[in-house]
View 1 (spheres, rainbow, N blue to C red):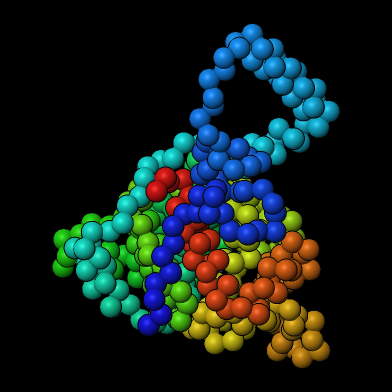
View 2: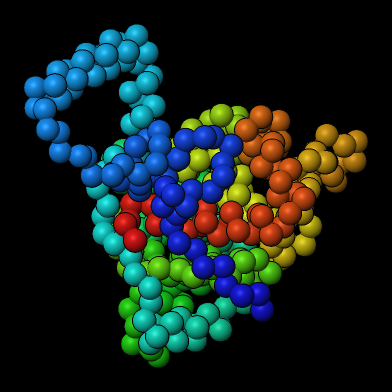
Length: 325
Ligand code: HEM
């Protein structure tokens, strides 16, 4: 068994190298959107000169932003705007033992639907309002068109929840269990081992509709949908590698590997072979033609280790949206 990839939510200093130069972590409070963390401001000895320079800066900012309104919006878009709904923690030894016991009864064949459930639960997050996110609300959203097929995944989550509560006397939220089972799905299919934090609070009603991106959106639309959650293009490309699992034609349906990216570069859907034309879904097919996505796809196609490392980080991001850790 591969050693666990311990994922810490990256701070601004630890920010991975991304195609964009600016840090994009939503939780980097106290950090300049354009540079390294700010030190505590030095006390200004000359009050009047500070005040003057402050007024000058304010004036320049007003003039600049009236000429380039997207400047202010751009700065704002780098941050999570809503306050966290709570904080997460590592499971205790007793909780870990109960989880391990509960997972032992799940069959590997359920891995694809369990991983997909993570996206459908968390992918409703809106960083402006703080609504949605990994909150177990997917159990109230099963009649939506995008939720087709998810019911059997949720049945597994419910069964594991009951078994953990009965045997281990541990009460985990649906939201936590969905994330735990998604990480299990990745690992059991040969992907990275990921530690998961717990403490998510279950919603008691469905999240807003039309938040999960439509599979027929162009690449830009999907990127915007991820940006609304506070996720960037690297997260989009890394997490889309989940489609390695399931029956969309990216190699073995129960093997989590980088065949997905190799296939995207080959574009089999353009082939004359009618079987190959069926490979993938529209949201996958637009990625290799997107200038920002392409280099990331190439990187993962040539290095499974790079894919696994980034996937683990992006999984930690999507599964903690709305929370501080
Ligand atoms: C980029 C936006 C995405 C779109 C538009 C999308 C859409 C879809 C669609 C249409 C399917 C096929 C469902 C079916 O067979 O009926 C699918 C399968 C799947 N998706 Fe996504 N998805 C996206 C991102 C993600 C992400 C971020 C994850 C994981 C975190 C994920 C995990 C999966 C998995 C594991 C499957 C296979 C499920 C199975 O075969 O049971 N998807 N997705």
